[in-house]
Amino acid sequence: MILYPFLIEILQVLILLAAAPVFVGWVRVLKCWTQGRSSAGIFQPYRDIRKLLSKDVVLAENASWVFRFTPYLVFGTAVIAGGIIPILSVDLPLAATADVIVLAALFAIARFFTALAGMDIGTAFGGMGSSREMTIASLAEPAMLMAIFTMSLASRSTSLSHMAEVILSGQPVLRPSIAFALFAFVLIALAETGRIPVDNPATHLELTMIHEAMILEYSGRHLALIEWASMMKLFLFVVLGIAAFAPWGIAPSGNLFALPAAFLFMSLKLGAAGVALVLIETGLAKMRLFRLTEFLGSAFLLATLGMLSYFILE
Amino acid sequence: MSLQVAAHINSFLAAFVLLTAFGMLVQRRMYGLIHLFAWQGLFLSISTAIVGFVAGKHHLYISSLLTLSLKVVLLPYILHVLILRLRIQKEVETVVNVPLTMLIGVALVIFSYHLTAPVRELSTLVTRSTLAVALATVMIGLLMMITRRHAVTQIIGFLAMENGLFFAATSATYGMPLVVELGVALDVLIAAFIFGIFFFHIHTTFDSLDVDQMARLKEGD
Image 1: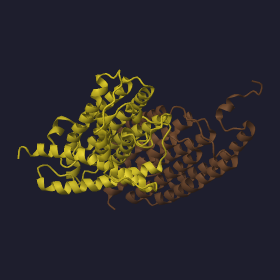
Image 2: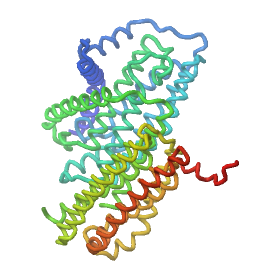
Image 3: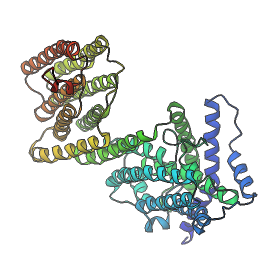
Image 4: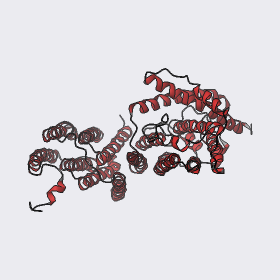
């Protein structure tokens, strides 16, 4: 039984690797439906990854080690993040050493290296994408930490699995601070994962792309890893939201038999989150880049108001 | 409905009042502003009714209805007509530095929390915790009057301030006497009419409702 938490850890990472492309496929299928197009099916991201993995890597002559190292690092941080967030069970040995601040730092490292790699080759698009990504990051990260801190006030802990455990054991209560934090988190998640209205994941239009601009020079297995990692990032943000705001269904500590139910709940919640995401993306237009400060500023404001209303109103 | 649940709902409504105050602070479009103002009035009116229920003060129901008719229906309607008549419905105001304004707003919330903390310790009312929000709403309304340049938005800021004062009265002492509230409501209504007349005059004289234009007194320079 000592090994049991480690098995959960491995299971979570495997689920992350396998389910992230399916989730992205689900979102794309829904999007096709809302726009009246026929879709390629929810397993299309797998085929894309397989195709990219079998292709050769084309490297620019002046690419340095940063450029070659970045895809592995981005992929690795996403995998580690899968071990920190309670996806199926709160029994995570890694969660004891790494809390939500570490999680934010992991995302920050991945982003830092992606931005460096964008500038490494020296093309105009890479530099432009990196500069935009950093602009967004500098505004989104404090807001994200603020939103998560508001949640951790209630459980007096920044460890994600402890936060989920406290919510699971207590009565479900409606609090203004949680409502604010949830709203802020949705805005930040849209920005961090590069969805509409901040960035369009499907675009290759030069003037508007942000994340795509940074990874424009990647090909072959490097591109496959980066694409896979960005799918995992979307998945991670959704499960992070679930763990922090609606963890009902996640298996409590030491309960092996709750795992199938936890898996079922996870799939249902992810399906619902996909629908919500597509509704948001279909209903909104992409925002001008200079309006993003206001978008993320209001996310920060909401998170701060959430924290303040915890002290003022509760 | 138990006391606990009522207090809970009331704090939620207080949070929404604060949120609409911030929304008004950064809203650029005229109609959006008026809608936010109407929403704030609605939250205020529900909150007043709940406080009236909890405290057993029945005159609060009347002031809740007064708020509903005046601040959710009548004043937004008057402003709406005004904007239509002045042909400024498409006008989009430039708001100076939205993130900075928001940060100042947050600082004001913290300040008013700090200011009302002693009252909160002493008071025994159910609504004592919403006093900080009420004070913050007043201050944010004031901030809106300072940062905006358009006469109509300044008036909406003024009305939002009045909302905050009303909320403060409800949360600090379970509302003012009914006579006072009726008087205030009438005052606000008259003020709205007078503002309307003033707007027309400003608009015909200066061809704009930007108050910066009024800084020049002489025609020559």
